[in-house]
Length: 190
Image (cartoon, rainbow, N blue to C red; front, top):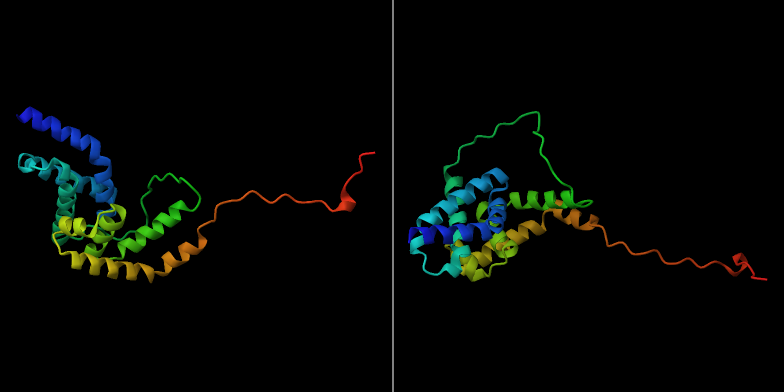
Protein backbone atom coordinates (compact mmCIF):
# COMPACT_ATOMS: atom_id res chain seq x y z
CA UNK A 1 0.00 0.00 0.00
CA UNK A 2 2.78 2.46 0.90
CA UNK A 3 4.73 1.63 -2.28
CA UNK A 4 1.64 2.39 -4.40
CA UNK A 5 1.09 5.67 -2.55
CA UNK A 6 4.74 6.66 -2.99
CA UNK A 7 4.63 5.83 -6.69
CA UNK A 8 1.38 7.73 -7.20
CA UNK A 9 2.72 10.77 -5.35
CA UNK A 10 6.03 10.67 -7.28
CA UNK A 11 4.14 10.55 -10.57
CA UNK A 12 2.03 13.56 -9.54
CA UNK A 13 5.09 15.58 -8.50
CA UNK A 14 6.90 14.73 -11.75
CA UNK A 15 3.94 15.80 -13.88
CA UNK A 16 2.85 18.96 -12.03
CA UNK A 17 5.91 20.41 -10.27
CA UNK A 18 6.73 22.84 -13.11
CA UNK A 19 3.31 24.49 -13.06
CA UNK A 20 3.19 24.52 -9.27
CA UNK A 21 6.66 26.09 -9.11
CA UNK A 22 5.44 28.94 -11.35
CA UNK A 23 2.56 29.59 -8.96
CA UNK A 24 4.93 29.52 -5.99
CA UNK A 25 7.26 31.95 -7.78
CA UNK A 26 4.44 34.37 -8.46
CA UNK A 27 3.43 34.20 -4.80
CA UNK A 28 6.95 34.76 -3.44
CA UNK A 29 8.76 36.73 -6.14
CA UNK A 30 11.96 34.79 -5.62
CA UNK A 31 12.97 31.44 -7.15
CA UNK A 32 14.73 30.16 -4.03
CA UNK A 33 11.76 31.02 -1.81
CA UNK A 34 9.42 29.52 -4.42
CA UNK A 35 11.35 26.25 -4.37
CA UNK A 36 11.24 26.18 -0.57
CA UNK A 37 7.52 26.99 -0.59
CA UNK A 38 6.76 24.26 -3.13
CA UNK A 39 8.85 21.70 -1.26
CA UNK A 40 7.04 22.49 1.98
CA UNK A 41 3.64 22.34 0.27
CA UNK A 42 4.46 19.01 -1.36
CA UNK A 43 5.69 17.61 1.97
CA UNK A 44 2.41 18.64 3.61
CA UNK A 45 0.49 17.13 0.70
CA UNK A 46 2.41 13.86 1.01
CA UNK A 47 1.54 13.60 4.68
CA UNK A 48 -2.15 14.03 3.80
CA UNK A 49 -2.05 11.92 0.63
CA UNK A 50 -4.04 9.03 2.10
CA UNK A 51 -6.86 11.39 3.16
CA UNK A 52 -7.28 13.03 -0.25
CA UNK A 53 -10.17 11.20 -1.83
CA UNK A 54 -10.59 13.20 -5.04
CA UNK A 55 -7.23 12.90 -6.80
CA UNK A 56 -8.62 15.05 -9.63
CA UNK A 57 -8.65 18.05 -7.30
CA UNK A 58 -4.99 17.74 -6.29
CA UNK A 59 -3.89 20.94 -8.02
CA UNK A 60 -6.46 22.94 -6.08
CA UNK A 61 -5.44 21.27 -2.84
CA UNK A 62 -1.73 22.01 -3.43
CA UNK A 63 -2.48 25.61 -4.49
CA UNK A 64 -4.37 26.11 -1.25
CA UNK A 65 -1.45 24.68 0.73
CA UNK A 66 0.89 27.03 -1.18
CA UNK A 67 -1.20 30.11 -0.38
CA UNK A 68 -1.73 29.13 3.27
CA UNK A 69 1.96 28.30 3.80
CA UNK A 70 3.05 31.56 2.13
CA UNK A 71 0.64 33.50 4.34
CA UNK A 72 1.93 31.72 7.42
CA UNK A 73 5.56 32.43 6.48
CA UNK A 74 4.76 36.06 5.77
CA UNK A 75 3.20 36.46 9.22
CA UNK A 76 6.22 34.90 10.92
CA UNK A 77 8.88 36.52 8.77
CA UNK A 78 11.88 38.31 10.07
CA UNK A 79 13.72 40.89 8.09
CA UNK A 80 16.78 39.06 6.86
CA UNK A 81 17.55 41.28 3.93
CA UNK A 82 20.03 44.07 4.35
CA UNK A 83 20.70 46.99 2.05
CA UNK A 84 23.96 46.84 0.17
CA UNK A 85 25.78 48.94 -2.39
CA UNK A 86 26.40 46.01 -4.73
CA UNK A 87 23.75 43.96 -6.46
CA UNK A 88 24.64 40.26 -6.79
CA UNK A 89 25.01 39.02 -10.33
CA UNK A 90 22.09 37.04 -11.67
CA UNK A 91 22.02 35.00 -14.84
CA UNK A 92 19.23 35.92 -17.22
CA UNK A 93 18.39 34.82 -20.71
CA UNK A 94 16.87 37.59 -22.75
CA UNK A 95 14.37 35.84 -24.98
CA UNK A 96 13.36 38.89 -26.94
CA UNK A 97 13.89 42.61 -27.22
CA UNK A 98 12.07 44.44 -24.50
CA UNK A 99 10.64 41.27 -22.94
CA UNK A 100 12.79 41.60 -19.83
CA UNK A 101 11.70 45.20 -19.30
CA UNK A 102 8.04 44.29 -19.74
CA UNK A 103 8.26 41.31 -17.38
CA UNK A 104 10.14 43.40 -14.85
CA UNK A 105 7.54 46.16 -15.05
CA UNK A 106 4.66 43.73 -14.58
CA UNK A 107 6.42 41.98 -11.71
CA UNK A 108 7.19 45.30 -9.98
CA UNK A 109 3.54 46.30 -10.29
CA UNK A 110 2.42 42.96 -8.82
CA UNK A 111 4.96 43.29 -6.01
CA UNK A 112 3.36 46.61 -4.99
CA UNK A 113 0.04 44.87 -4.31
CA UNK A 114 -0.75 43.60 -0.81
CA UNK A 115 -0.27 39.83 -0.43
CA UNK A 116 -3.96 38.92 -0.58
CA UNK A 117 -4.53 41.02 -3.70
CA UNK A 118 -1.45 39.52 -5.35
CA UNK A 119 -2.63 36.00 -4.53
CA UNK A 120 -6.07 36.69 -6.02
CA UNK A 121 -4.55 38.16 -9.21
CA UNK A 122 -2.17 35.20 -9.59
CA UNK A 123 -4.87 32.59 -9.03
CA UNK A 124 -7.57 34.33 -11.11
CA UNK A 125 -5.57 35.61 -14.07
CA UNK A 126 -2.35 33.60 -14.20
CA UNK A 127 -3.75 30.24 -13.09
CA UNK A 128 -7.08 31.07 -14.81
CA UNK A 129 -9.18 29.84 -11.91
CA UNK A 130 -12.81 30.85 -11.61
CA UNK A 131 -13.93 33.13 -8.79
CA UNK A 132 -15.40 30.12 -6.96
CA UNK A 133 -12.18 28.10 -7.34
CA UNK A 134 -10.08 31.05 -6.18
CA UNK A 135 -12.36 31.53 -3.17
CA UNK A 136 -12.06 27.84 -2.32
CA UNK A 137 -8.26 27.82 -2.63
CA UNK A 138 -7.88 30.92 -0.47
CA UNK A 139 -10.61 30.02 2.01
CA UNK A 140 -12.55 33.25 1.45
CA UNK A 141 -15.95 34.08 -0.01
CA UNK A 142 -16.61 34.67 -3.70
CA UNK A 143 -17.61 38.25 -2.90
CA UNK A 144 -14.24 38.82 -1.23
CA UNK A 145 -12.50 37.44 -4.34
CA UNK A 146 -14.50 39.84 -6.54
CA UNK A 147 -13.85 42.90 -4.40
CA UNK A 148 -10.18 42.04 -3.86
CA UNK A 149 -9.65 41.47 -7.60
CA UNK A 150 -11.45 44.72 -8.37
CA UNK A 151 -9.25 46.69 -5.97
CA UNK A 152 -6.10 44.98 -7.28
CA UNK A 153 -6.94 45.67 -10.92
CA UNK A 154 -7.85 49.29 -10.12
CA UNK A 155 -4.48 49.71 -8.44
CA UNK A 156 -2.70 48.10 -11.42
CA UNK A 157 -4.57 50.39 -13.85
CA UNK A 158 -3.25 53.46 -12.04
CA UNK A 159 0.34 52.20 -12.10
CA UNK A 160 2.22 54.68 -14.28
CA UNK A 161 4.98 52.24 -15.22
CA UNK A 162 2.45 49.73 -16.57
CA UNK A 163 0.69 52.46 -18.51
CA UNK A 164 4.00 53.59 -20.01
CA UNK A 165 5.03 50.00 -20.80
CA UNK A 166 1.88 49.53 -22.86
CA UNK A 167 2.89 52.49 -25.01
CA UNK A 168 6.34 51.13 -25.87
CA UNK A 169 5.36 47.56 -26.70
CA UNK A 170 6.56 47.24 -30.29
CA UNK A 171 3.99 46.52 -32.97
CA UNK A 172 4.56 43.47 -35.20
CA UNK A 173 6.89 44.23 -38.07
CA UNK A 174 5.30 44.40 -41.50
CA UNK A 175 7.18 44.03 -44.75
CA UNK A 176 7.80 47.42 -46.34
CA UNK A 177 5.46 48.40 -49.14
CA UNK A 178 7.07 48.06 -52.58
CA UNK A 179 8.23 51.35 -53.95
CA UNK A 180 7.04 52.30 -57.39
CA UNK A 181 9.43 54.10 -59.67
CA UNK A 182 8.29 57.19 -61.51
CA UNK A 183 7.81 56.75 -65.28
CA UNK A 184 10.79 58.96 -66.00
CA UNK A 185 13.05 56.56 -64.09
CA UNK A 186 12.07 53.43 -66.02
CA UNK A 187 14.34 52.10 -68.75
CA UNK A 188 12.91 51.36 -72.18
CA UNK A 189 13.60 47.85 -73.39
CA UNK A 190 14.60 48.79 -77.05
